[in-house]
Image 1 (cartoon, rainbow, N blue to C red):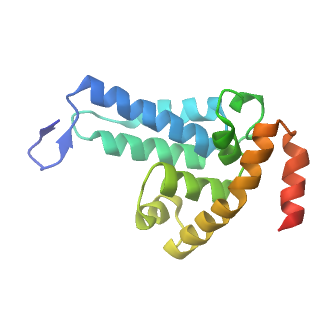
Image 2 (tube, rainbow, N blue to C red; image 1 turned 90 degrees about the vertical axis):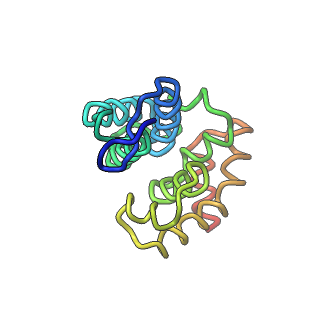
Amino acid sequence: MENDTAGTQTCTDPAGLAETIDRAYLTAHLLAGDRERAENAVLQAIEAWNAERHNEEELFEHVVRAAVRARGSADPGGPDASFLPAELRAVVNLPRELRHCFVLRMLAGLSQADCARMLRMSPKRVGQYTCSALKRLPALAEAAAAGVPYLTWKMRIEWAD
């Protein structure tokens, strides 16, 4: 990384860029719920990104925004998530808002304020959704590890709430 005249750091390290893209892809996969939407989010962000004007964290933020906007008919946590460990399959199967808050706060390590800004919701709502996700995840991870079909255990959890 080197400083440009505006004082921001631009990307000059290919290894750092590759690490950022890997991190962004995994985050996008967990946010979007499937591989295709995650790949599209990364590609959209790379196309909009300018290495001479933006740093790697801005690229990561572009990927997150694209993944959060991604909508589709694919079943989150379906066969596309089979390569993920049971714990991450459980994350993918969280309801959309809970998943977004949990992934950004707990896995990506963003502040509550940054999550709120990126998700366009109040910091209080981010905290509530993150707590709800933390309460649901143990049962989801247990079901995912046991191989219980998604719809069966999803209904069990929703009925238990």
